[in-house]
Amino acid sequence: MGSTATTTVPTNAELMEALAAVGAAYFQDFAAAAARHGLSSSQAKALGAVQEPVPMRALAGRLGCDASNVTGIVDRLESLGLANRAAAAGDRRVKIVVITTEGREILNRIRSEMARTHQAFEAMTDEQRIALHSICGQVLPVLAGRTVAAQ
Picture 1: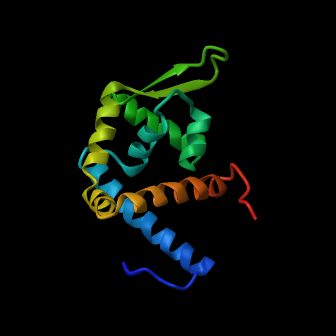
Picture 2: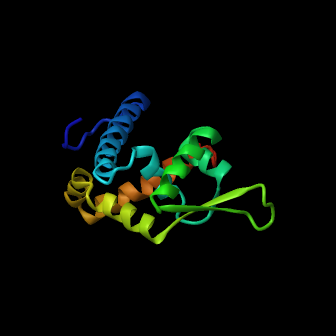
């Protein structure tokens, strides 16, 4: 994948390869920044997924893993003071997870330390940034199964 504009419409396979490559490079940058703070990528990703109170089962869905795996992730975040778990008001059997102030600070540091990601974004024009944000907003709901793409 070069940095020059193309005049041909990319195939679905080419778009898939480009999206996978961008996702993998972003994830490597994210995981390296998380590791510098003693967190696994799953733990750091969980911090990003609990910006508001989230039931454990919903958190498992957001992270793409089963509930037993989420329990271990949240146990670790709680032990570090980065997240809290409490019973839901309407159903005490449901456990709700929320990020703490310290957890939010760590997540912000992780994101600020993602040098390669920042470098890529800073190399973009305002128009490119707007276009990327718009495209992500269009593609993500479909990939996440929340909507059907327009034909």
